[in-house]
Image (cartoon, rainbow over all chains, first blue to last red):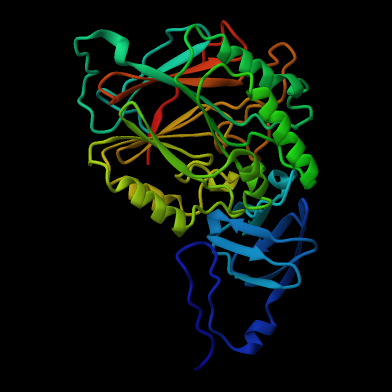
Amino acid sequence: MHGVRWKLAASLAAVLAIGTSDARAQEKVIKVTAEKFKFTSSVIELKVGQPVVLELTSLDRKHGFLVPDLKIDETIEPGKVTRVRIVPDKAGTFPFHCDAFCGSGHEDMTGEIVVKP
Amino acid sequence: MTEPKGRREFMQLLGLGGVVFASGLAGACTSIPRKSGGPENDFFFVQLSDSHWGFSGPPNPEAANTLRQAVQAVNGLPVQPDFIVFTGDLTHTTDDENERRKRMREFKAIVANLKAPVQYYMPGEHDAALDEGKIYQENFGPTHYSFDHKGIHFAAIDNVSDPKSAIGDAQLDWLLADLKPLAADAPIVVFTHRPLFDLAPQWDWATRDGSKAIDLLQHWKNVTVFYGHIHQEHHFRTGAIEHHAAQSLIFPLPAPMSLPKKAPVPWDPMHPRRGLGFREISVDESRRVLTLKMDSLEGQGTAQSRTAVGTY
């Protein structure tokens, strides 16, 4: 395979990619932790066209990471790293939340991905 | 969202402090049937939802009283309903299992004062999602079930015991088997906690595999869904199926996606029970026309604005 060939979904974010390890190594990695009842960081800033990998980990129990507008739907299991690759193709603010019910503050476990031009 | 035409028209206020909404079960004729014989074959039931017993906080400083007030209000109806259905979030969740059991016991003690002879309960995610319904079932029995009442088939679907809000294929298989013997035009009423359709996934107002349930239900012509979860009255249509959300008994939430972030509507000491209430559902003798009325716990003078039925 010559170069890098990206397969982009119709949605804003493309999670599937076929590429070289060099290209992957250059991608920005953003670590996000989940715990009752917050994400750190709860605001994830990205730039249009800049691929990033979110590394999601849980500090306590199973959580969810649902970004409906980007069609990202992940489960974050304790002891595992869940990686999500995103290539933003337009600016905007896209809310996310934990969608694995985790207790009395579950509804507050929210955040947003802010994509800047 | 578009407003429906024909028989699915709204009727404006009839009672005090409530809004009346005529909802034809899909497949009915375009006018409300009125056969001879009078209303003696009509019946009605009451939907209560989202009492969140055990909640405390600024959105409702009177939370320790609200459920009791609702029981009192239902008991005060001129005629008692044939049955009451409580569409979930009976209790507010807590990580402490003993406290969760205590809240359910306390809830049961309060609703034991309801005069209505028959009561059906179902879980919300606050009751069931932390232990996949274990403690709920200890107290209230199965989380999904069906029953028949005076010519209508009722089915309660559990879309909360799975912490990621899936109904699951096993339950969908059960639902299909449960409905299969029914004629295509049989009147069917479905109870859920969460909306089956994607009302606002960004606010967790959806069911992960709700579209499967809707696809299944579409095979019958006369299906109406009543649900809770969103703490406000809401009417929506997917194909021939109407979906009606009820107000809560703890605090109202804002209209879907009307704010950047979902949060309870701030408590108003001048109107401490504003936005809280329960629903009466009257069924005419044809079993094809339902009349919905929200009763406010605030009492008189709380006419609510009309709400459009959206099209999916």
